[in-house]
Length: 222
Image (cartoon, rainbow, N blue to C red; front, side):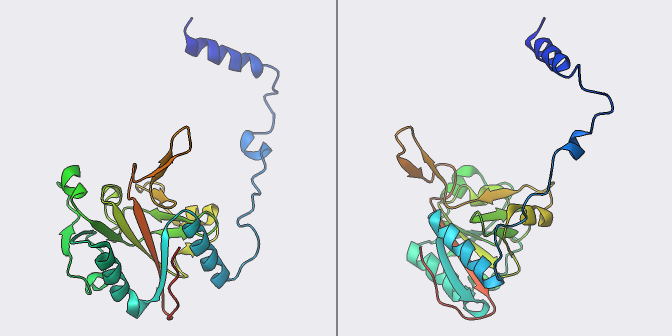
């Protein structure tokens, strides 16, 4: 008898006394989860997102829409980025204030070629305030998953408040499960058994999130 057969046999024996007309699992388990924790205004939800992003060691900036190009240009300049990979559907105006060489997101680009790129700039699909999470869905303004995993510096633009939700359930309602979803909570990091934190192992070492709105606002850095 194989291990599989033994396990299935145990399952059948455990279920032997369950009535055939028992309440189906889908109905027996309560699904009335909280859709969000607490009551917040739109501004408070955006503030919570910024706070939790900073807790994850992302660097958070706020600006108005007409300031976005200048902010992105400054961040690339401060990083010393000479090359930046650009998704095909990214608004070209976002990079109008930088002299960095723009590399397109190409299917034939190798990991070694992407590793030589200094930075990547993308939009996002949705941002979750309660968890400080940015979700990318491989859309034209977000590009292929690998362009946000290999370069060491990622600038992600979030439109507020329209792309910000409070909770994971609210985010899932906006996302297509068939898309290649990438969930990002801060820069890539891992810890060994002694809890020594190492960043940049599984993705960008530095994540900068720009919360852009239609109104001018003060910049916030973590």
